[in-house]
Amino acid sequence: KMAATLKAIGHCPSVRGGNGTGPTKAEQVLLNHFPDAFNNYAVKTGGGLGLPNHYKIDVAFPRAMIAVECDGASHKMVMAQIRDRKKESKLRELGWLVLRFSNKRLLTDSGSVVSELKSIISKFQGTRATFLNAGK
Image (cartoon, rainbow, N blue to C red; front, side, top):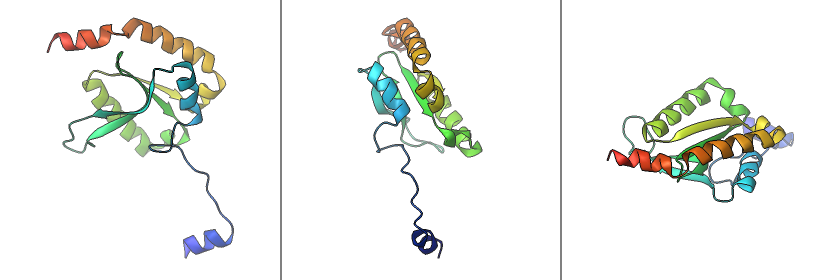
């Protein structure tokens, strides 16, 4: 009944971003500044207790092992925050540096975000992966 009612009143929700829909506007801002970055980059987790087989990183810098997560309003919900922390924890366990930026900041203050990322990437480019693999 609900679907019929919504259809009858002309309700048409906006299309949300996410896996498989291409980059969001905020992700695209970063991809424009960092053409070597990857959007929705899959990282295998090995699965296991309550874990998916892989996590997708919004914007990834694999050589530096830096994951950038671009958070929209849905990330303020408690369940989303729990999923985000679980994802962050696993990515860190796998050697990734995880950074989070709100979509709002990416869209209104992209200059400072880009500068911050460039600084971090220059510190970790190549050395991070070399360091992490040295003990293996």
